Structure formats: structure tokens, C-alpha cells
View 1 (cartoon, helix red, strand yellow):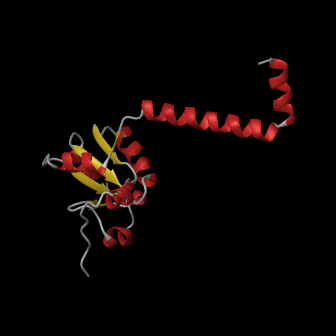
View 2: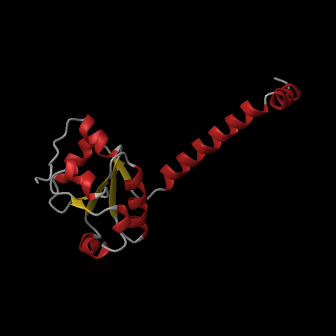
View 3: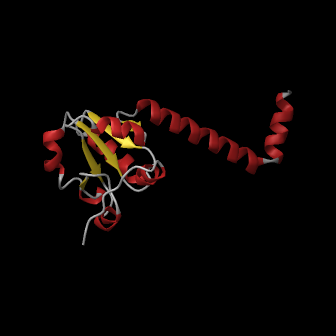
Length: 145
């Protein structure tokens, strides 16, 4: 493969080439974030295993109306927007396993980063959130009205 031909292709197909490089950069960034993250992503099966430890708590960072539709048994509902204000309730669990979940895994990722930054040592993120929990046919509790 001749470098001149590669340069010609890149200049003739600059949109395609730009898209390729953008995808490569995003993949490298994701790989780097995964390698350097201080929390662990866990599957629903691993969550069940972690729940066998009585010190483990489940932190659901969804909004109360989402939580009411169904949540992991005994999960604490602290919406992501309220996490800073309610960190005092989690302080006694700083060295205990904490499983963080949300609907799809977006908000829980932000919560995990925040908790590890504040010194929580055993933070686990439910990969795929409650959607993956439901897909795995795991039990949910619903708030009774």
C-alpha cells in the first residue's frame, strides 16, 4: 500500500476518513476510561452474588417515579441530582460494597465516578441498569400505593 494512494483516498473521501478517525478516537477513549476507572461494572448475576454480603447496599439513582415502578429489593433511592445533598446517609458505607443502578447505566456511571472520587472503595455499577436486570429475569420490588 502506497502512502501517496492513502493520502489521495483521504483527500477524495474526507468525510469517510474523518468519521473513521472519530470512531477510532472514541474507541480509544472508551478503552482508556475502562482501564482507569476505579469502580467495577457488574452483571446482574454478579449483583446477586454481591448481595449475599450483608454489608452490601444498592443505590438506585433514578427519580422516585422511576423507582416506584420497580427496583431491586431494599435499594435506596437517591436521585443523581440529590446525591451531593444526601452523601451523609452513605458515609457509614464508605468501605462497604455499593451497587449503583439507574435505568440504562448512564446516570449510574456518573454516580460511580462521584462516589469513587469521594473515597468510596467498593463501588460497583450494574451494567445496563435496571433494563439488564429485567432482561435477566431478576426480581423487582414495586412501591405499593
